[in-house]
Length: 356
Length: 224
Image 1 (cartoon, rainbow over the protein chains, first blue to last red):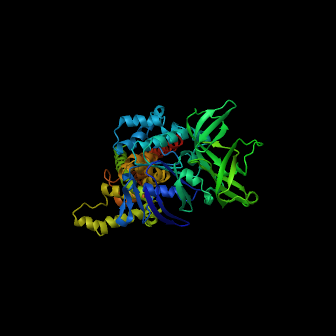
Image 2 (tube, rainbow over the protein chains, first blue to last red; image 1 turned 90 degrees about the vertical axis):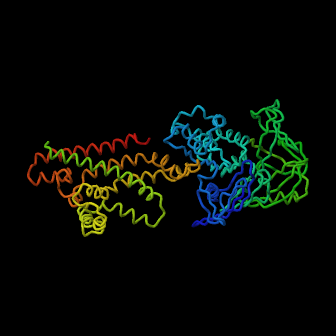
C-alpha cells in the first residue's frame, strides 16, 4: 500500500508519505492530535487530500494528478470506528447483511465462518441497543469483514471500551490477525494494544510519520522519537518452553531464556512479551548474588539520550544467533562509571517481563 | 353542526393533508441540504424558509396575492401559459399553505438529520451504499422521529392558519372557506353558538395534537 496525503487545516497540517506492507497488521501509533485518524479517513475516502495518492494492492484509489478519486462506497474496504456504529434501526443480522448485500457477497459459508470467528452467532436476532460495548464492536468488525474488503481499517476500535471488554475482544483481534489475508491498518494510541497485535509500526507525530518499520525492530530503536521515549521498551517473541514446579514459566527465544510468572497457555505456544527499558539494568559481569533471575549476556550496540533528564538509553544485542535487541534506561552517571560504549560486552539484568 | 360547518371542516382536512404530504416530500431534501451544506447560502436560505415564523400572515398573503395576481410576476407567466389563476382557488390555498407551513416541517427534519451526525452515512458508504441508497436506507429511518413531529406540526399549523388563507383564498364556501375563516364568518354574523362548536373543536384538536407530540416524545416510542 502506498499513500501520499497532504492536508492543511487551521492549526494542523498533515504531510504523509507512507509505504506499507500488503499483509499483516500495521499500527498507526501516536498521541492524540497526531493525525492518525485523519490518515485513516483519507485512506477511506471520507476526507480528500487535494493532491493525494493512494494505491492498495496495485489498484489506484486516488491519484489527483490524473483526477482519480474513488468515493468511499466504491472502495473495497472495511471500516471499524471507535464507537460502535451499528445501525440502530436494524437487527444484528440485518446490520451484517446490509454490507453483504451491497458488496454482492452471497457466500453463506463465509457468513457462518465470519460470525463464528467473532463469536456472535447468539446475538443475530437481537437489537444493537441490547448488546454490550464489546459485543457491538465484534458485530461491527464482522459487518466490515462480510463485505469481503481488500483492506481493513480500524480506528481505535478498543478505545471506548473498559479494560474488561478490551480483554474480552483482544483475543478475537489476534485470531483475525492470524487468519486474515488482507492488510489491516490499525489506529491506536495504546502501546499495549499495538505491541500485542501489530506486525508493522508507523509512528506519527504532528501530522508526520517519524518512524516506520517492522514492529519489533522499530520499538528497539534507541533513537526513538519522543512519542515513544517515555514508554520505551522492546518486544520479544518467544515460545513457552515449560511450566516449572516452583510456579515459574520458562520462555525460550533465539539467544536466551526468560523466567516469568506462570501463565495459562500450554508449552509450545508462541507468545509476545514486552520488556520496558526502565526494567533493564546493566552489569559488567554475571553475578550470582542477586535476586534477579533473568540475566542475559549482551553487547552494547548504541547509546542515545533518553527524555528523562540525566538518563541514557542503551541498546543491547543479546548474545546468540538472531538474538533480539533490548533497551535499557540507565542514568548518565552509571553509563560513565561503567564506561559503556558501543561494542562493550555486558550482562543485561531484566527485572520484569510483561507477557502480552 | 350545520352542513356549512361540515363543508369547512372537510375542506380544511383536505387542505392540511395534501399540504402535509407535499411538504414532507419537498421539505426532506431542503432539510437535508440545510443540515449538511457548508455553502454560504445556508444562512440566507434557512432564513427564507423560516420567514413565515416571524412574518404576520397577512404580509405573506398580501405579497402572494400580488405575485400570483394578473399583474404579478408569477401570475403573468401563468397567464401566458394558459394556466388557471391561483388567487381565490383551492390550488392557491395549497401553494400559500406550503410556504406558510414550510418551517414547521423543515426544522424538525433538519434537527433530526443534524442530531444524527455524519457517522451513519459514513458507515453506510463504507458498506458500499451509494449516497442515494444510504439516504433512503439509513438517513430516513434514523430521522423518523423528526418526520413524525414535522407531519404533526405541519398538519396542525395548516389547519390553524387564517391570515394567509383569507388574503389568498378569500371566503368562498366549499372552495376556499376553511375552518378558521368560517369561525370568523360566524362571529361576524353573531352566530356564536355555531362558532363555539367549531372553535371548541379546534381547542380540543390542538390539545390532542400537542398531547400526542409531547406524550410520544416522552415515552420515546418513535425512537424506532
